[in-house]
Image (cartoon, rainbow, N blue to C red):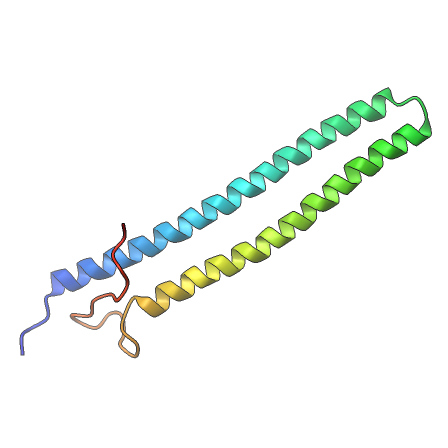
Length: 122
C-alpha cells in the first residue's frame, strides 16, 4: 500500500474550502447589494413623500402622499423578509453542500489521502 500524498490531499481540501468560501461570499454580496438597493429606494421614497407633503394644499393630498409612502415602505419590508428567508436558505444549502461534498460519505475530511468529490472550480 502506497503512503498518502499529504501535499496533494491538503491542496485538494484547501481548494475545496476556498471554493466553498467564495460561493458563500458571492451569495452574501448579492444579498447585501439587493438590501442596499431597497434602502436606497426607501430613501428616495421618503424624499418624494416629504416633497409631496410640503406642497400639499389640503389634508386629502397629505393623506394620499402618506398612504403612498406607507404602502411602498411596507412592500420593502415584505421584500426584506422574503429576501432574508430566501438568502438564509441559499446560504444553508451552500453550507450543507460544502459539508457533505468535501469528503466521501462516512470518511472524516481530515483523513489522510482523502480527496474532495466536488468538481474543481471553474
